[in-house]
Each structure stands twice: as C-alpha cells, then as structure tokens.
Amino acid sequence: MNNLNVQVNVKAEDVNAQDLKQLEPFNHLNHLQMLHESSDGWITFALKINEQYTQYHYKYNDLKSQVKDSIENFHINTHANIYISQNTFYKPQRRIENIRQLRALYVDIDCYKTKYSKDAVLYFFQNDFSDKLPRPNLILDTGRGLNVIWLIEPVPYKALPLWTVIEKYFCAQIKEFGSDACATDPTRILRIAESRNMKSNTMVKILDYFDHKYSLREIQEEYLPELKAKAKKSSNTPHKIISLYNQYSLYHARIMDIVKLCELRKYKIKKYHMRELILFLYRYWLCCFTNDGYKSKHNQ
Image (cartoon, rainbow, N blue to C red; front, side, top):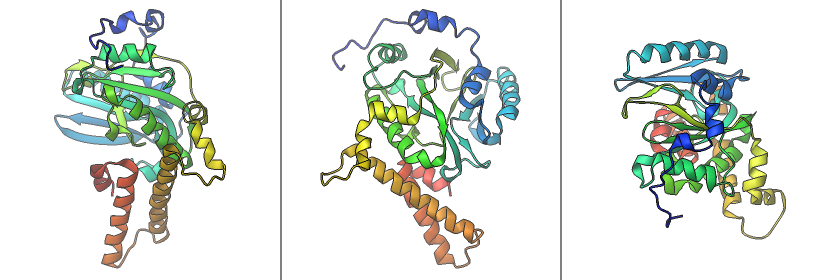
C-alpha cells in the first residue's frame, strides 16, 4: 500500500453515489438514533466552548432534545464543539467501571498528521480493507480527520476485554492512515453529525453509512479466529492476540476488584496510607488498560 499514489483523485461525493444519496436527510438525530435508540443507560453529552469543557449525562429520550437544541443554538454561537459517548453507563459518571453497554467500536483517524487525504482514506475503506476490517457503519468527516464507527449488538461490561482486543486490532490496521491509539478507550466521546469543529471551522458530516449491526463474537470469529484457541488447552506459547486478551481481562478484573472493595467500605477509607495505596493501584491498572496516563490520573 505504501507504493500507491496517495493523491487519489476521488471525492467523497463520487464514491458509492447511490448510498450517499440516502445521506441527504441524515442528521444529528439519525446519528444519535443509530448509536443509542434502544439504550436504557446514561449517555455522555459534552461541550467544549472557548477551551472550557463541560459534560452532562442523559437518557436517550432526554438527550434527543438536548442535542437538537444545542445544534441549533451553536449554529449561531459557533464557538462550541459537541460530543457524545459511543457506549453507555449505568450511572451518570463517565468511567470504565460504570460501563453498562458496549454499543460501538471506533477509530479516530487524524489525517492531517499523515500524507493521506481524507478522500484517499475513504477510498481505501471502500475498496481495499474488506479482508482486514468489516465495512464501517458510519464514516464521519470531523474536519481534520475521520471518525470510523462499527455498530454492534449491545453487550454488557463483562465483554470489555474482548471489545478492547478488537478495538486495538481495528486501530492497528489503520495505523498508516493516522489512527489515534489513545482514542480506543470504551468511555470515548466523539463528535456528532452537524456539530462544528472549531479548529477547522467546518461542520461534521456523514460521508458513508451502512445500516447493519454486527455482533462482537461475529467480528472476533471472522477477523480474530485465534482467540478461539483460548478455550483449548495447549502447551504452546499463546498467540499475541490471545496474550493481549488475557492481559486486558486481568487489568479489567483488577480495576473492578478495587472498585468493589471501595463500595463494600462505602468509600470510607480511614487510614491515609490505605487510601493512597488504593488510588495508586486504581490508577496503575487503569493506565495499563487504557494506555493513557492522563486519563488514568483524571479518572480518580
């Protein structure tokens, strides 16, 4: 692929013209509906206005009106970036241990950091990636890059280790095109259609969509079949993917153990050194799980 001419002269509106014609009525409400229509968990809604970040949590029906009002208001006040979480939470707090349902996989592609244009990346997705990745359900032009999203049948937090391995795999396949390895955590918020990227001063647009939902197991069996070997006893050295699955299972279990201990004590840790130890271990395992030191620090 390195030998391909990266200046692919293909415009987004010229690719899959029949599918893209269906996008004419596609707006922020359609986007929200595809992600969260059947959800009963809390969804994060975030605003960044003049470098000031705030976030709120809503159930799906309440969020629809909130997003609609925000989109309309901030088309006038164009200093706002609007984001929503791709997965949901069982209480209004955006943390890994509060994950209620995993509803999507995603890759944030920073095209501006690579030699590839957005049109070139879109072309490769629609023509060259079928043997490495399933067809995305949504591809959004976010201004300086692309958000690529795969919708999945909702699964509970116990599937998080498998979700994480698949998420890391997807990101690795697109590394050459600028995929952001730091944007693979399950609490990630991404821009919503018809909102505005203030850095590029452009509107977020849907370039392509595919009306389908994958199952997490379906993706694993098709693209990571080696994980099946986990159920078989073998004296051989584990494959790298299986090793990653085991690691993330361990990291997640340790995080949940610490949270459970705190819950049993009603978060009343009297001894100072025990409190510091718990915070250290929580941050350490969260950092291992997310590969994000900043997020682990500010998630305490």
